[in-house]
Image 1 (cartoon, protein in one colour):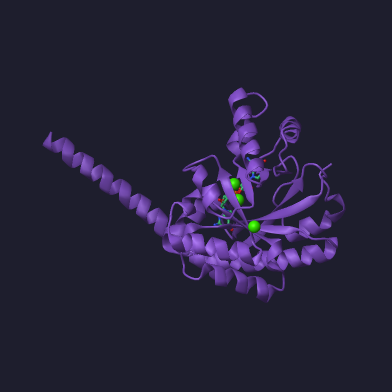
Image 2 (spheres, rainbow, N blue to C red; image 1 turned 45 degrees about the vertical axis):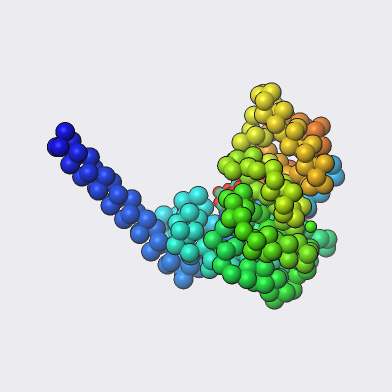
Length: 279
Ligand code: C2E
Ligand code: CA
Ligand code: CA
Ligand code: CA
C-alpha cells in the first residue's frame, strides 16, 4: 500500500509539472504575442430576424502565431485570465472594436453595434466603467453603439461594486448582454438584479432545437421569459435553415451563426458590404 501511495504521488508530480510547464510556455508565447502584435480582432455579424438587417458585430479575438498558425481563444483566454494578461488584451480589443465599428458605420452609412466580450478579471480591475467610457470617448463613438457581453461567472461576484459598475454603464447608454445563457450558473435573479438589455441563448440549446422537443421547449421558454422582462433575445450558433425558421416562429429577435456569417476580418467584412442582409 505504501508503494502504491508513492507511485501515485510520483504520477501526480510528473503530471503537474507537465501541466505547469505547458502553462508557462503559453504565458511566454502570449506575452510575446501582445508585444509583437500577433493578436487581432475579427467580427461576426448578427442579424435582426424580422427585417434581415445587420444589427450588431461581435468582436472575437484572434491569434495568428508565426509558427503555429491560428490558436483558438478557448486555448489562451483562460491562461490570460489566470495571469491577468486579459486586462491588457481586453483593453486592446475594446479600443480596436470601437475604432473598427466607427469605420464600418461610416462605410455602411447606418448605425451598427459592436459587442465585446468581457472577462470577470477585467471587470474587477477597478474603475472598469470609467475605463470603458474613456475608451469610447477617445475613439469617438457614442455609448449606444457598444454592447458588453458578460457571462454568469462574472455575476457570481455578487458584490455591490459589480452592481454599481453595471448600473453606471447602463445609465451612460452602453448595452449589457448576458452571454451563454442557460449554461453554468444560471440564476434568474441576475436578470432582475442587473440592468441587462439582451440575453444570448447558448448554442447548446439552439443546436438541437429542431429535433429535440426538450431543447425546443427550453428555447421557447427562454424567449417568452426574455420578452416578458423586456430583453432582446439573441440565438447563438445558428447553423441550419430549420433552426432559423424555428427561432423566427417563436419570436426570437436576433440570430448569429455560421449559417448567416462567420467571424471575419474588417477587410473581408467591408468587401462584403453589399451582402450585409440576412437573406
Ligand atoms: P462566445 O462569446 O460564446 O463566442 C461565440 C463563439 O461561437 C465564437 O468562438 C464563434 O466563432 C463561435 N460561433 C459562432 N457561430 C457559430 C456556429 O454557428 N457554430 C459554432 N459551432 N460556433 C459558432 P471563438 O471565436 O472561438 O471564441 C470562443 C470564446 O472565447 C468566446 O465564446 C468567448 O468566450 C471567448 N472570447 C473570444 N474573444 C474574446 C475576447 O475578446 N475577450 C474575452 N474575454 N473572451 C473572448
Ligand atoms: Ca460572446
Ligand atoms: Ca439599458
Ligand atoms: Ca456565447
